[in-house]
Amino acid sequence: MKIYGMMFQRYAIINIKETKKGEDEMNIQSLKSFIAIAETKSMSRAAELLFVTQPALSQQIKQLETYFSVQLLERTNRGIKLTEAGKILYEHARQIVTLYQTLEKEMEDFRASITGSLTVGASSIVGGYAVPCSIFIFKEKYPESHITLKVGNRRQILEDLKNGTIDVAIVEGEKPDGNLFSSEIGNDEMVVIAPNRKPWDERNILSLDEFLKQPLIMREEGSGTRQMIEKYLSRLGIDKNQLNVVMELSSADSIKAAVEAGHGISIMPKLALKKELYNKTLVALKIENITLFQKIHIAYKHEKAQSNVAKAFIKFMHSPNRGFC
Image (cartoon, rainbow, N blue to C red; front, side, top):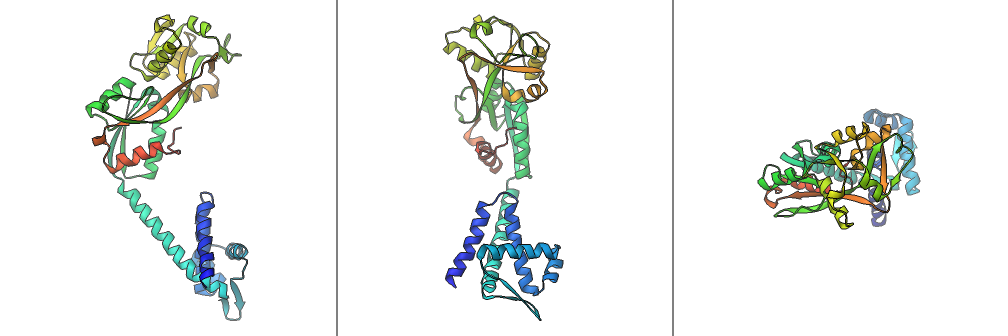
């Protein structure tokens, strides 16, 4: 009996751990279906109670019998009877279903316990094109939480964090310094953008000398993107005064519009270019022998990140499925 019991527990564990999302419930449902048949001693009555068809119910039992390689049910003149293996499954199935229902209830209670308000600050690119999606997914997981998003340039957001105006900051560029806890949560490739017409429409690369000669549209001072570009070029021995800057704009959308209109080229994270590259209004080019990546960091003060909602959000943003869109 002990060996059979271990076998049925193995069934539950394997199916819960190894199946894809959506299939776990089906496996638990198979056990629920088996319990209903065992207790009603009738396939038709169990199907009515479970609101399923008899063929669907029969298929679930067949899958269980195939998995265990044993017969679980016998049909008699008095209805359905459990075999010896069926009796063992019935006892363990009740325990497994009860544990599963307890787990679901406790997880639901945990999600409901993540309550309260959180103010998140994000620099322009990540705040305009990724963090809103992350917040939406977080809210789906923790519907009782209330998240406010403030978007600005990197300098403004980090200043707000230091002043306590916001609770958590998500910024592009260098690792934030000062009295802050921070860690990298992602990165994004930087590309040169140009209008999708001659002489750019059939190109995907340009030389560094060619880049330096082109009219360049840049973000304003204090932008994480601008900071990163200037630091990287400085490492290559290029002073920012060598750049042919013809315009400084304070938003990614205004820069993209200016580039589309033919006023110059720019450098921008790919994160902000999905729509334009899909619609082919802009082209993305690389500078020869140079690969640019912009890191994304989350930063906070220890005392501002002690609430349940803050801890849950910070952990969520570190997870692989944090939801950058």
